[in-house]
Image 1 (tube, rainbow, N blue to C red):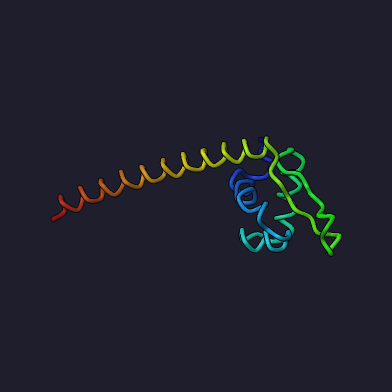
Image 2 (cartoon, helix red, strand yellow):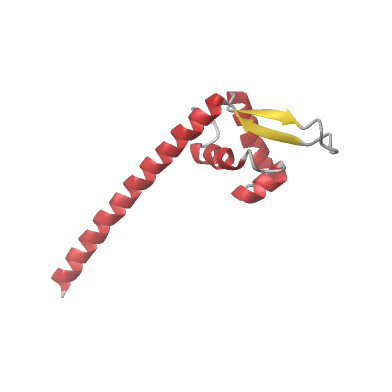
Length: 110
């Protein structure tokens, strides 16, 4: 992805909630985005082929749409989740090292 693309964390956040949200407004509230940002991320996911739009024909609200992950979208969601976990593990390990260093300095300072 280029620097102008939507961030990995934004894509992952939306992908985790896209199939269960009833509307873009509800999705935006669930992930803590503005509706405009949620729409921007959804458009990015559509352009990349990671989600598809389903119109619910049986719905009384003919403007009701649902978003479904494509097989490529599911692969990307898994890859982004693995990358996220890897980053968080690295952050955790760095914090653990700093904590041990601080504990060592505390013992010396006594």
